[in-house]
Length: 300
Image (cartoon, helix red, strand yellow):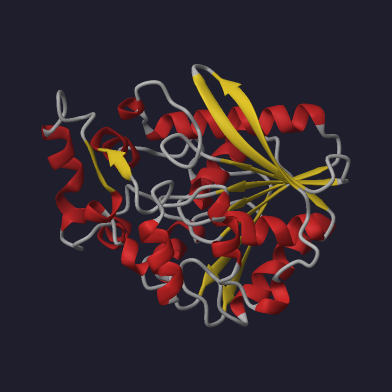
């Protein structure tokens, strides 16, 4: 699966030789979290790489490999409900657990790493990375490909499939509380997963991937995400520098959606558009620019 995702990157971005990759396990509460690590554990820069809806460590391997090959130690968790992470009673997965898990993982990485520690968050992982960084103060920088505030009605319209569902999803899901909360539905039923990339082969790969975009998600998770709010509102954020590296041709969450949150940020920030790239940015020259930005985060 790693190789299938890697094959969608431009050939000149695929690390050769590929860095060593290791599967590890981290016990968090009652969850066995699968964490992939790549690159030298003694590297001066450590990168926490976060996926969003439909992602997992293997899906992010193309960019983990780039960062590891450029001298970083990359830490990529499978968040509960995705990848190989094992959750007792998986129907109980909720978005606040993602926030708490990533915050604790960030603190743990800071405790054992004295050098530079940065976060790269893809898609939904962008706001997740911002939230963990501002809650903990443990990161030196954050790069997000998207800043999707689920409270924003404009953002909700873009998340949902069909678009009108975004306006009614939260109240509808509240009405379904109780026995239906644990009902697991295909991710593609509720979100616009067909817009996850502008590369038809990559989109098909994601939709077939049972560990990612082809999987199921509890209705309670969707409701908890739509009801969530960051621990630090953007106007009060004083955390690390944030780079919004947004795909310029994103058909799922256009740049304007992310700017509604980005423009409110009080912390140091920078906007970079990834030219020619879709939501999952694998197209040139945007993919090359994203690789440059990730490497630059470690040098800053």
